[in-house]
Length: 180
Image (cartoon, rainbow, N blue to C red; front, side, top):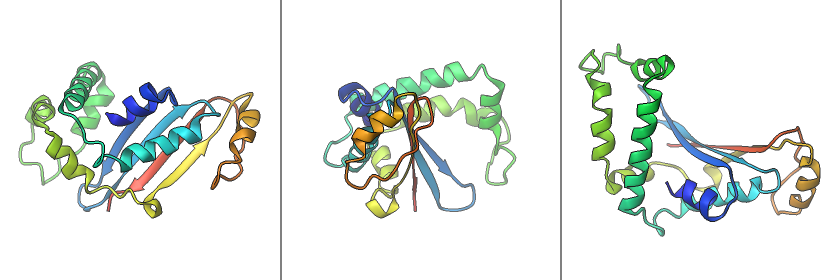
C-alpha cells in the first residue's frame, strides 16, 4: 500500500513496486521480496525509499482507507486472475496437505471473505514478524539499458554502493528479507 503510493506516486522513483510474502508449510519461517522496476538512474533511490517505507510503518501508520484501497486492488486482481488455470493451480497447490481440513474449493471461495475481514491490526501483527533491520536486508540490483553506464556513473558516488554492470534495459531491484 504505502510502498506503491510513496515510492511510485509521491516520489516518482519507480514504474512498479510489489511485495510478495513466501512462507513454508511446515516451518515457521519464510521470506519476503520487494521488487522495484525503475530507471537506472533512480533505482538506488527507489530501493532506499522502499527500505524507509518498510521501516517507517510504525511512525507513519497505515490508514484504514489505504487498507480498503489495497483490499479492492487484491479483490480485482483475484477476479481477473481467476480466469487463468495457472492461478487456480497455485491456489489449489496445498489442498492435499493433511493440515487442510476440507478438501474442496470452499477454502478458495472464502478468499474474498478473508480479504474483506482483514484489519489494520492484522497487518501490524504480520508486519511485526518481518525482519527489517540492516543486517537482515539483502538487495540485488540489476541495471540495464543503453544509457545505464552513464546514469550509474553519477550514482556510484553514493556511499555504500559498489560497482554495477550495465546490461541493457531498465533498473530492477529485488530485495529479499528473512521473516524469522
